[in-house]
Amino acid sequence: MSLDEALTTLLTAYHGYYDVNRESPLPPFAAEAEFHQHDERYFLMRSAKLSESDSRETVYFALEEELSLERAHALAETAWQDGLKRYTPEWNHRGADVILIVLTGRLSADAAKGIPKIRRGKSYALSLKGWSNFRLIAFDVHSGAMAYNRLGQPLTDVLRNTLCKKGNGQ
View 1 (cartoon, rainbow, N blue to C red):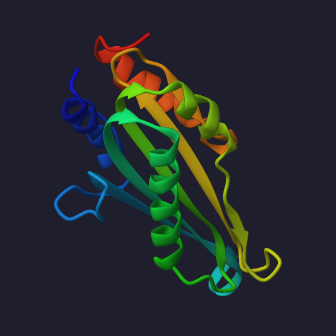
View 2 (spheres, rainbow, N blue to C red):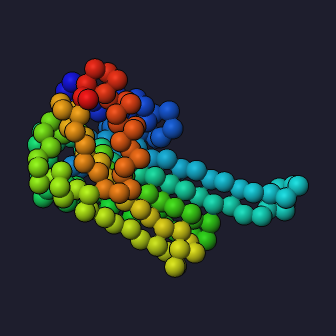
Protein backbone atom coordinates (compact mmCIF):
# COMPACT_ATOMS: atom_id res chain seq x y z
CA MET A 1 0.00 0.00 0.00
CA SER A 2 1.37 3.41 -0.94
CA LEU A 3 1.40 6.40 1.40
CA ASP A 4 -1.36 8.13 -0.59
CA GLU A 5 -3.56 5.02 -0.48
CA ALA A 6 -3.00 4.72 3.27
CA LEU A 7 -3.89 8.38 3.75
CA THR A 8 -7.05 8.03 1.66
CA THR A 9 -8.12 4.98 3.68
CA LEU A 10 -7.43 6.75 6.96
CA LEU A 11 -9.24 9.93 5.92
CA THR A 12 -12.27 7.87 4.91
CA ALA A 13 -12.43 6.54 8.46
CA TYR A 14 -12.08 10.04 9.94
CA HIS A 15 -14.61 11.59 7.55
CA GLY A 16 -17.63 10.33 9.51
CA TYR A 17 -16.81 12.35 12.64
CA TYR A 18 -14.33 15.02 11.57
CA ASP A 19 -14.30 17.91 9.11
CA VAL A 20 -11.54 16.75 6.75
CA ASN A 21 -9.45 19.21 4.74
CA ARG A 22 -7.28 17.68 2.06
CA GLU A 23 -7.42 20.57 -0.41
CA SER A 24 -5.63 23.30 1.55
CA PRO A 25 -3.90 21.94 4.67
CA LEU A 26 -1.14 23.82 6.41
CA PRO A 27 2.20 22.96 4.76
CA PRO A 28 3.98 20.52 5.23
CA PHE A 29 0.92 18.40 6.03
CA ALA A 30 -1.02 16.34 3.50
CA ALA A 31 -4.38 16.76 5.26
CA GLU A 32 -6.08 18.09 8.39
CA ALA A 33 -9.20 17.08 10.28
CA GLU A 34 -11.12 18.95 12.98
CA PHE A 35 -13.63 17.73 15.51
CA HIS A 36 -15.84 19.98 17.64
CA GLN A 37 -18.14 18.91 20.45
CA HIS A 38 -20.43 21.14 22.50
CA ASP A 39 -22.16 19.68 25.54
CA GLU A 40 -24.79 21.35 27.70
CA ARG A 41 -26.45 20.09 30.87
CA TYR A 42 -29.87 21.31 32.00
CA PHE A 43 -32.11 20.87 34.98
CA LEU A 44 -35.64 20.20 33.76
CA MET A 45 -35.65 23.04 31.19
CA ARG A 46 -33.20 24.86 28.95
CA SER A 47 -33.32 28.06 30.97
CA ALA A 48 -31.92 26.16 33.99
CA LYS A 49 -28.50 25.43 32.50
CA LEU A 50 -26.17 23.62 34.87
CA SER A 51 -23.07 23.55 32.71
CA GLU A 52 -21.68 23.58 29.21
CA SER A 53 -18.37 22.51 27.75
CA ASP A 54 -16.55 22.61 24.43
CA SER A 55 -14.02 20.06 23.25
CA ARG A 56 -11.91 20.19 20.11
CA GLU A 57 -9.41 18.04 18.29
CA THR A 58 -7.23 19.07 15.40
CA VAL A 59 -5.54 16.22 13.55
CA TYR A 60 -2.61 16.76 11.20
CA PHE A 61 -1.64 14.05 8.71
CA ALA A 62 1.91 13.99 7.33
CA LEU A 63 3.37 11.74 4.63
CA GLU A 64 7.10 11.03 4.82
CA GLU A 65 9.08 8.56 2.71
CA GLU A 66 11.57 8.24 5.57
CA LEU A 67 10.95 9.68 9.01
CA SER A 68 13.96 10.82 11.01
CA LEU A 69 13.82 12.10 14.57
CA GLU A 70 14.69 15.63 13.47
CA ARG A 71 11.82 15.63 10.97
CA ALA A 72 9.45 14.23 13.61
CA HIS A 73 10.40 17.09 15.96
CA ALA A 74 9.86 19.67 13.20
CA LEU A 75 6.44 18.25 12.28
CA ALA A 76 5.44 18.06 15.95
CA GLU A 77 6.40 21.67 16.60
CA THR A 78 4.54 22.93 13.52
CA ALA A 79 1.39 20.97 14.41
CA TRP A 80 1.49 22.05 18.07
CA GLN A 81 1.98 25.75 17.34
CA ASP A 82 -0.73 25.84 14.66
CA GLY A 83 -3.12 23.79 16.78
CA LEU A 84 -2.81 26.19 19.71
CA LYS A 85 -3.54 29.18 17.45
CA ARG A 86 -6.84 27.70 16.26
CA TYR A 87 -8.83 28.26 19.42
CA THR A 88 -9.08 30.62 22.32
CA PRO A 89 -9.96 28.97 25.62
CA GLU A 90 -12.91 30.34 27.54
CA TRP A 91 -14.65 29.29 30.74
CA ASN A 92 -16.63 26.56 28.98
CA HIS A 93 -13.53 25.14 27.27
CA ARG A 94 -12.73 21.61 28.41
CA GLY A 95 -10.00 20.34 26.15
CA ALA A 96 -8.37 21.03 22.82
CA ASP A 97 -6.10 18.24 21.66
CA VAL A 98 -3.58 18.45 18.86
CA ILE A 99 -2.90 15.15 17.10
CA LEU A 100 -0.15 14.37 14.61
CA ILE A 101 -0.33 11.20 12.53
CA VAL A 102 2.71 10.53 10.37
CA LEU A 103 2.43 7.87 7.68
CA THR A 104 5.88 6.84 6.58
CA GLY A 105 7.51 4.41 4.19
CA ARG A 106 10.38 3.84 6.60
CA LEU A 107 10.53 4.61 10.31
CA SER A 108 14.16 5.19 11.28
CA ALA A 109 15.53 3.65 14.46
CA ASP A 110 16.31 7.04 16.01
CA ALA A 111 12.74 8.22 15.33
CA ALA A 112 11.30 5.05 16.86
CA LYS A 113 13.34 5.68 20.02
CA GLY A 114 12.81 9.44 20.18
CA ILE A 115 9.10 9.81 19.36
CA PRO A 116 7.94 8.53 22.79
CA LYS A 117 9.87 11.43 24.35
CA ILE A 118 8.08 14.13 22.32
CA ARG A 119 5.60 15.61 24.76
CA ARG A 120 3.68 18.82 24.87
CA GLY A 121 0.84 20.07 27.01
CA LYS A 122 -0.69 23.28 28.19
CA SER A 123 -3.28 24.21 30.79
CA TYR A 124 -5.25 27.43 30.71
CA ALA A 125 -5.88 29.34 33.94
CA LEU A 126 -4.71 26.42 36.09
CA SER A 127 -7.00 24.11 34.05
CA LEU A 128 -10.07 26.16 34.95
CA LYS A 129 -10.33 27.07 31.27
CA GLY A 130 -9.28 23.62 30.10
CA TRP A 131 -6.10 22.19 28.65
CA SER A 132 -4.42 21.07 25.45
CA ASN A 133 -2.66 17.75 24.96
CA PHE A 134 -0.42 16.55 22.15
CA ARG A 135 -0.80 13.08 20.68
CA LEU A 136 1.75 11.73 18.22
CA ILE A 137 1.95 8.49 16.29
CA ALA A 138 4.13 7.44 13.38
CA PHE A 139 3.06 4.43 11.32
CA ASP A 140 5.29 2.57 8.87
CA VAL A 141 2.83 1.52 6.16
CA HIS A 142 5.13 -1.19 4.79
CA SER A 143 6.05 -3.03 7.97
CA GLY A 144 3.22 -1.99 10.30
CA ALA A 145 5.74 -0.70 12.87
CA MET A 146 4.58 2.17 15.07
CA ALA A 147 6.14 4.72 17.36
CA TYR A 148 4.02 6.92 19.59
CA ASN A 149 4.12 9.12 22.65
CA ARG A 150 2.18 8.23 25.78
CA LEU A 151 -0.97 10.07 24.76
CA GLY A 152 -0.76 8.70 21.22
CA GLN A 153 -1.00 5.07 22.37
CA PRO A 154 -4.83 4.86 21.97
CA LEU A 155 -4.38 5.73 18.28
CA THR A 156 -2.55 2.46 17.67
CA ASP A 157 -5.83 0.53 17.54
CA VAL A 158 -7.35 3.04 15.12
CA LEU A 159 -4.42 2.78 12.73
CA ARG A 160 -4.03 -0.96 13.07
CA ASN A 161 -7.76 -1.61 12.51
CA THR A 162 -8.05 0.87 9.65
CA LEU A 163 -4.85 0.25 7.72
CA CYS A 164 -3.80 -3.30 8.59
CA LYS A 165 -7.16 -4.87 7.73
CA LYS A 166 -6.59 -3.71 4.15
CA GLY A 167 -3.89 -6.34 3.82
CA ASN A 168 -1.14 -4.08 5.04
CA GLY A 169 1.19 -4.35 8.01
CA GLN A 170 1.17 -6.81 10.88
